[in-house]
Image (cartoon, rainbow, N blue to C red):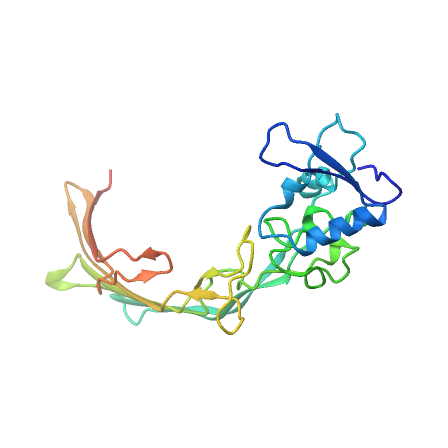
Length: 288
């Protein structure tokens, strides 16, 4: 973008937004009157998108320096709008395999204090034209605006877009803090040779599934104490089991297996999805 009018934007704004053939006015933000008008508009802006303000976004109006013209390039073009966030997992996890005999096998596994930490929450690039202080990314509301924050809350230094603070307080992932599983299977011998039974259970701690800070929202959703709302699923316990018959007929190994999942028939609501109830599946396999 070329900065017109000695380091300030010249803005084209519609007077009658409802009319297809609407009249427009030019505001020169390099003079006190134009700057005062824009400051007042930003201070009293209603929730919504600021794009209605910026008219004249085409090559037929070369006299208008509109920071919104940089929007696409700033976000998706050669300048890339942000340095991606970087995360790392932390916590403890392990698995124990216990085989006390040729017939019995037990597997224990679990994770404790599991968490995905944002080592870098991401960073906006430094926009090269700080004189465009009425750009849409400074707008108090709207999807690409400040989402209800003040300019001082959103930027450490409003003249430097790379100082944009992180507005999200969502935990960052839905990893449960604790997860434990146990599984055991037993192979019979003697007159019951070929029969195998097994069962397993899993416990999962609560998981975050909703945050009051969402992309594109006009304001942060908080509770009566002013804290950002984060909703969690209840803890979940699941038990599955199976029985299998292995046999050989015509020189070919075969088996038939019955699986029963969610033996407790837990069909509660977890987040926004209901857990499927108890189910059964019969499988037959033959080796060729």
